[in-house]
Each structure stands twice: as C-alpha cells, then as structure tokens.
Length: 151
Image (cartoon, rainbow, N blue to C red; front, side, top):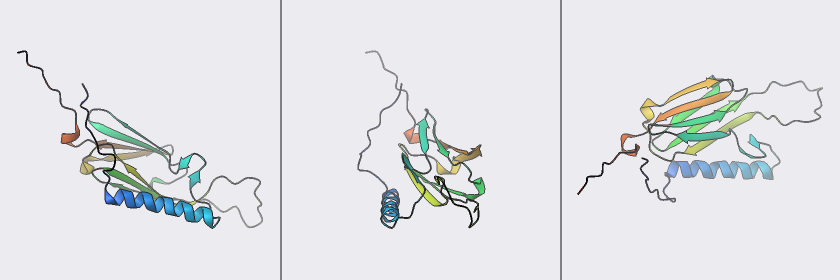
C-alpha cells in the first residue's frame, strides 16, 4: 500500500530554482546570439528518466560519447546536478558539413527529486553511454504500512 504525501508545488530549494533560471537564461542568450548549445529539438541535454520503488529513486541519463571521468555529479536531499562537457574531435579546417547535429560543449542539468534521498548512500554507474544513479530514499520518505485495528 503506497503512502501518499502531499507536496507543495511551489516548494523548491533556492539552489534548484536558480539553476533552472540559469539554464533558461543560457538558452535565451544562445538563441539570441546564434550560438548553439547542447539542446535537442525535444528538450534539454541530457535526456533523463526518473523512476522509483519503495526504497530508491533511479535516474538514467543519456550521455553518449562522454567519458564518465568528464561528468560531475552532485546529490543533495532533493536534487541532483549533472554537469560535464562533450568533447568532439575537430575534422579539420578543410571539411565542409552537409549536416551538423552533434554539438560539443559544457552542459549542466538540475533534476528536482520527488522525495528526499540519503545523498551519502547514492551510487552511480556508466555503461554504453547511459548513466544510472541509485538514490536511497530518506527513511521519513519511505511508505509506511499501517494496520487497521478491528473495533
């Protein structure tokens, strides 16, 4: 039986809100000055999935072509920050592109978590361009089974 916990939709940590605002401002400046950033037509890079079970939150992030050594992860109680840089090899000055969709450069993505986690027990693994994080939920965030007494 899942325990429902009401969350105030306006409750966000100041840091995650500032990171979100910085991402939006960077996007705006990149578009205005004609500089392309690590954005896809469908969203922000990297694409992520967030899932959960009774004990853990799981985040998977697509980071193709990025060395795990170039990824910086920060886990707090209610947010995860993924930072890094995609380095592309230069093809040379004489090369002219017919299509160029892969871009290089720095990126930062802040994911606000749906519940509190124990940051000290978080783990991460990278395999085949996919980063997987396992974030144990804080004890107070785990569902509690309540027995019903017969009267």
